[in-house]
Image 1 (spheres, rainbow, N blue to C red):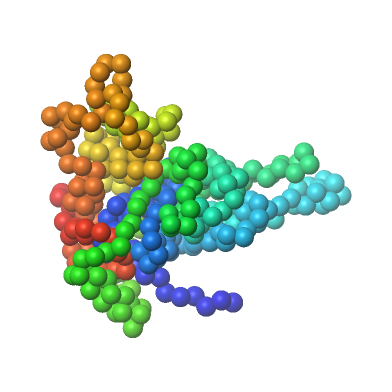
Image 2 (image 1 turned 90 degrees about the vertical axis):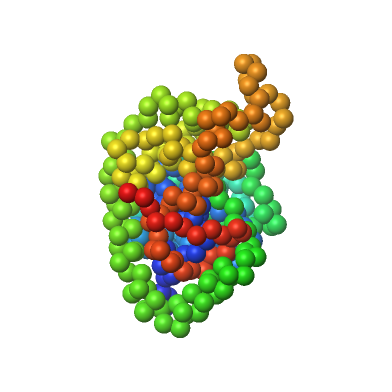
Amino acid sequence: MSPVFPTFPFTALIGQAPLQQALLLAAVDPALGGVLVSGPRGTAKSTAARALAELLPEGHLVTLPLGASEEQLIGTLDIESALRDGGVKFSPGLIAKAHRGVLYVDEVNLLPNPLVDQLLDVAASGVNIVERDGISHRHEARFVLIGTMNPEEGELRPQLLDRFGLAVELDNCFDAGARQKIVKARLAFDADPQAFRERHAGAQAALARRIHEARGALAHLEFDDAVHARVSELCIAAHVDGLRADLVMLRAARALAAFDAARAVDVAHVERVADAVLKHRRREQDAQYSSRGAPATHATQQDRARPSPQEANDSDWGYLPPEPVGTAAVKNVRPLQPKKS
């Protein structure tokens, strides 16, 4: 058996508020379609993925290797057994093994496009279907899909980018104070992982409970006309193709409302998830976006009064400990504030 290495706590990550929010929303509602994390090497993408898996019911992470075949991914059917015994013998693939956990794909941009397309299909539907020679088998497959990529090594096709529910861009950290905190925390974890994890055990348990309770609350939250209107406004202004962005933004806002234990989804929830929904779908255009003549570049007075999605993420995502420590590095790190009651 391979050795089991301690996992760096999710609540101990530093400077990753947008990424933490995106991962937690996908944990609350895996049907969002996964999270695409883009950034250079050494920005703790895989650390965050492993840390999230520990908070989920099964607590496991399955990694999809770059050289994986379709059969390794979705599983196989034994046709000879079906013909001989009249029953379908199914050998589970990585998708089945990831059920209720995290399926992690490093360098997803280097996978064959058909494999990525199939993976995104299952992530959004929650069902894996294997067919061979007229015989089929289906099984539930609900997992949090996390794909990472370094843009310097190649891009994903726009059609595949759009299939990812949320996207986050990480960058190198050039803030000396933040870098020192990150390095000190990593050294402390490496020196005594058990003691480091024990210091965060309470926060970890509370966060896991919060995810579980949010999942149960999803079905009871609805969208009013103001929420629908703001989602349409943001998606039109971003010139997105199709309606997938609208649907994902509504689901993400609902997941955030559930995570916040809110009684209803409101416009503030939409604002806080908009950046992760639109980042990889936004089409920069200077043209006016509608026949009504409202230019995409002109913000209304109401828009100017609202915080940006980035500001909302940094200031209101307040579940972390007052002085979190961690291994991530992003640009323009801002301290998280305690969550207002």
